[in-house]
Image (cartoon, rainbow, N blue to C red; front, side, top):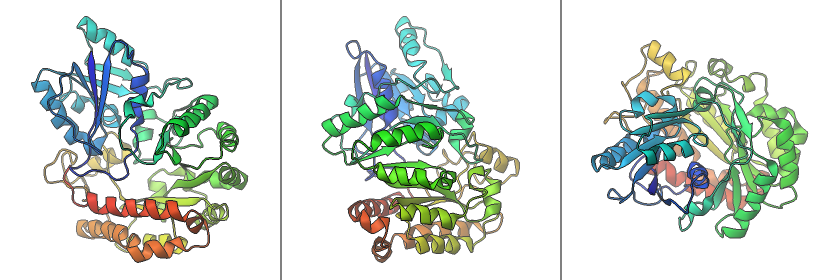
Length: 434
């Protein structure tokens, strides 16, 4: 059979920061290539053809790309081509996705991919294939041959683990996996990284895409000790509670960690508690920043802004906090109620949602409010988010932050390249229709 993997984009413009979509490398590794022909089209870096001569189309989507995914699916179903949709959006609200796909994958695809292909060949594919509990991913094969010839970023994704032990109100990971997590065999991860640098000329930095690389501290330490032997640069993301162990942060730096995305989420403890962000309850943000600065690790501060205790003054406070610490990057993210999360359900119950389904609404554009904030107007909310993004990423502020006598200047080339890519993406995505 001929199978096309499709990855839709938010809007019509190309992305400057697109990294390899690992889900498709997993599906490729599960497919008998001697029997089936596979192809990939990623709309972030290329057009998705609308007239492919294939037997099956497989689309992976999250909520922001759902509208585009449905349009692609509709096109191929009209042509009589069997259409499958998976990804986090499909796992969160499979009932809606079922209206647009012949088959929906809910949860992880490893356990059900083979059965689906067998059922399809017999002419009896099921409408829904579910695997809500995370499977054993110890020996998952990530077949990157599907990415050959594609111009992805110099930052190459690798997965060590899946899931997160935390249950934050706004998070899709917690909503799907319910605090569950799994890890891969460390030797397999190390061998994969060696192979990446051996075969991928563009590869400069490994990015661990784990939702939280510290789900199992013991395993993380084992991984970092192995990475130390490779003499590579890598980045990751995780919750800030790990900073209570300064020796671990030191080990990360020695092992080649150059950047970490930290979920500060907010600087108001009342908001943190409303989010159920327990990892942040008892930690001193100033101390955490000092620890990472001391160990020369770039900090990508991630915020969720617009929660119940934020006012119109919160934007300047968060911007000042970020500027004071000269963060490598700062993600000023508007609180976004994703369907299927506790946050969405709460806002719906409180009657605060502005759209029936914002992800499908023709009037919704990227960056706009999706709900009524408690302590500011909708206009103040939207203006505050945009101003934070623009002001933090002016040319002058990027260069001011570079000279911090710490991690930023130590990794000046990475700092400048990534900051200017990020700046470009801010303007590319501004007011883009989904």
